[in-house]
Image (cartoon, rainbow, N blue to C red; front, side):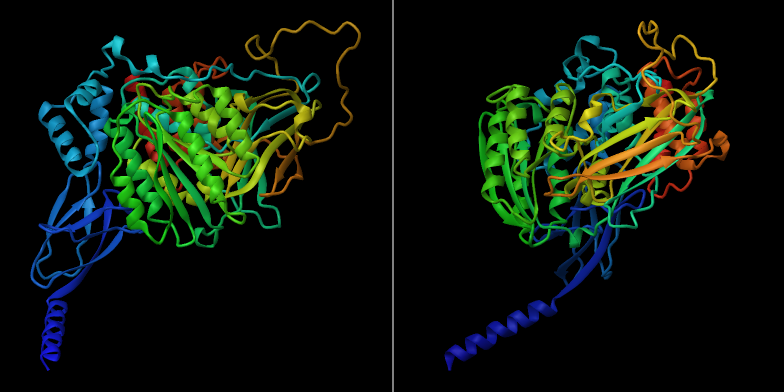
Length: 624
């Protein structure tokens, strides 16, 4: 009888406890109304809390009486909200401390009070990160007026020469691998927000163009890729034409996409201590983690003085376990990057999913200095694993010792994407809006080969893609590696065309002596009205034989003001890239003309990326 009385009392207490609680819900957004994924909501004075989901929404049981909620998101000022009697608590974060702190680190002066406040708030919310006086002082040295401490002196970018004009008679084909990377734009944005112009070799124009969405129509047939084109007057030279060629991959609902075997390979070396590196990196991976499904598995490998397995393969259903492992990471030590990659691949191979997506995601500032550190050694390892369908994507963070050249090479060899994450908004873009394109491949080894009709085209040049060029014979060689396209990805290529009969300048044409034994390499076969003939090759995932798609272009060139918003906006981005590279082909176009062109082409800009570009251009005028 005594047992029943005790059980009754226990049940009565539980029942009363339930009645003494209520559930509140809400949505956490930024000042533009964008959902903030992974924001923390905790009842003050307790450890009871939750995180926002992919839509920025949350649900939390609280005491029936009023409670105080502590709402935080790394990089923003923490808010305290009294629930009172309301069951719906929505919160808007306006001011980004992380952006302010990074801007301070880049050399734009702020009052000391706001600097110390930002550092205190950030360090108080990020467990396991050592943000000490030494690291803060190091970041404050990065003033654009202190030349000896210019971080670009230690950053690495691969050098390349800008594409020039070719004649169809001498060079009938333009052959290159596609590129869906967007790193160059976000990296240039970082420099300009820092109060500097980016180095010329940091500017890859195709990556800037492809940062933006051109609202392309998806495929309607069995091919995973569709092609389209548009032609109009070239903005920086009215006697020339600009040809815009687009690819768009089929979209895919992430919920219906193949399962994922992901290995987060995270650099926790001493160079990652600053807030724009490891702190931002962890928030980026939290955003990805919050979208994982039960059939997705994540492992975490870290490297500093040596490499280690922090988290064994864990289902996306156990998000808290993954998030806790991320939260505990802290920086310190040297950089055993090669050892880390070897271990990450070992884990990915041991848990290989034959029907899924197997990918290592490397997050670093690129400072490899211990272990397998030479590019050639790493390339051989990455190519070996790539051939086993384990791909490598790379996320870059921070400044000062940023190794763009090395990271771009690793991602290219690993059949993966390459991103530079300069703020939390970019992390959200990569791992929410473009998630399937980031981690789900729908077409491999995608190659372009474009033939120009010498009856209409006097000469042409490909804008960008300098480090993606292929030999003509590589196009039909299925063993030749090329770029990959993710679900929903798009690729845009621009050609500047000098039509037949237009007088050319010395800058536009290379000085080549006439042939001794023949008048030309090729003789036109037709007076056709085709400007170009496009050939595209791609492989479906896990297939070894490529598929060929062809399309002829007989477009009538339009006056610039008659072209689409997408055409003019892409042209504006290309011209900006040429200005940053001090291109001899940009004519008399200047920053203001690029701004005017971009404004005329802003069109539908629901997510604000085109307006951000215009704002960046206006800031660049002040910087230069």
